[in-house]
Length: 112
Length: 115
Image (tube, rainbow over the protein chains, first blue to last red):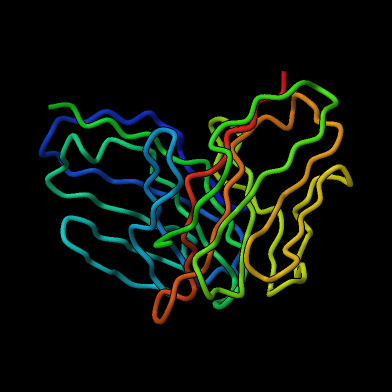
């Protein structure tokens, strides 16, 4: 079983919809949680970063972490066609210079 | 440069050949990471450099893979006797700065195809 599980999708939604992306994990040592967006043939781009449990909001994006359930989410409000990409959850056990463990990514398509 | 750069962007080689992939990191960063991303998968950790030395190479799949960073800036990932299963995108990353130091910033990757 992988340390980080993520539904690969694809997920297809109409423009303006609220999108919910999720990951579960098994390693209770994970404390740092990230979401990356990756466009086709590009490197991953950091979207959101959260330490420990709680919510974080940045514009149309909200990241939630529930460490008791080992479950993290990314919500995208008012989704746009430009949001069409693969979204990768990622996490690490400690801060500083540590390797990051990624989910497989969820492919999102926002239809105009 | 402003970000991490990688060369070449694409590399096609034949099974059994040797390849080198280059990473030019963000100036001044002592830490550098290599990851490998296979089709339909998330990036998988290969190796982490702190300065010139490999602080963690636990992700290298076997002894055909080797990486160096002789002057603590540019890094080269070397793959000997390439196999078709080595085909993937190889990503290089630097940590962020300040409050972002616990995250990683990626280059565009080198897409390696082994025929």
